Length: 270
Image (tube, rainbow, N blue to C red; front, side, top):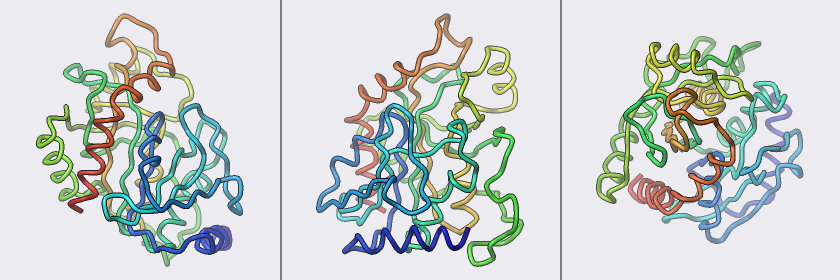
């Protein structure tokens, strides 16, 4: 794994003339923010040694590196998912590579289903904590000591100062913001109404199929993490209608101006 990480990070470093200091992971339908990065260098995942390829609609499958709000950023325009058949080591490889490149701050976004009945599609949820129900953990196996301890503390995965900053920027720009706990399942099937009732009882406010592996890994390495979910639909059984991935992409498209304003505002004051 160390060899794979080094090989990938060396290749990316050879393509860059800046040293990025903020990492962005852009979820389903939210990759449009990468189009606003200036002095950009685009690196396709398929060209990076040892990298998997993103196969999901709404995920472009590339890094975009450059400047955004006077910050040097490295954006993942599309991520990898457990349900695509990749193992955890492959899913979190980009986060390991970001760390090797010197990135200390990570903003993770996703599209999620609302479990909390007080949420509405189009809300942005600041992730306060998460529940891992994916049935796996990216830290399983031999621990790599240079990245972090064998048993990392998970008391505050999502940085409190960054959460407060995100809320401040949202209020200033009159963006509908909520706060809550994100639960990750393996997918690719959506959850049943019974499962959603169970998850609500367990304390989950939104559900998705990503983010948790990356944040566990970033926390292991001591990175500062901010997680934001775009509530693109209400989860099964909350409303009397079937779920469709097209709705996820459509809502993400609709709220992209607010999403852009929120993330750029956070970057500006980081």
